[in-house]
Length: 266
Image (cartoon, rainbow, N blue to C red):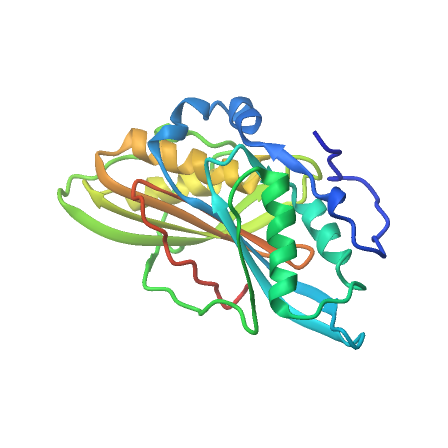
């Protein structure tokens, strides 16, 4: 396994350096959080966006695009965020003949690092802004718990409900640096209703929880599915960017890809 650069002071690479990419073992992360036995219960993808992707054209002129990558949530590895940032920095002074050659190189390096098929796309603008969910931010709750507890989630009395909810107050902590990670959580489901006050209280209980973005979303998905009688469930988190990169994990009972939209604050 390559060196993990999280929490360390590293010099910005001045030349192309694919070996700086660091894969993290997804199974090890799930074992630590007690989620490994549920990994077959959902599908989904991890979506990453880099707003600071730059290289040189054949005339040495800097080019800038927005990079979108995604890969399966059950791949053996996921990329360590700081190593991805450093890798993209290493492209800044490298000359390319076309955008396609940049995309192909990034895909080749990520495929080799993560041992999976990675989708790579360079765009002129970010994803569209879209939100048709019902916010639970203003729901009245009696208290905020210090640590995540799935027993807070309570099923409602209504049956055959189809609902899309969002909470923009979510915060967790980086497991290495303890820095806060802010996100909007989107929850769509079909089945018996979910009580909004318990759901909001549960999401807010992550404020002092240290976990990778992917682990937090998987825990939320599993806890809701275990506590409520649902036919379908999708959980998506739009995390605010750090270091020019945002991570948006999706976990769902469906096998189809979910459209990922950005928010105004992203």
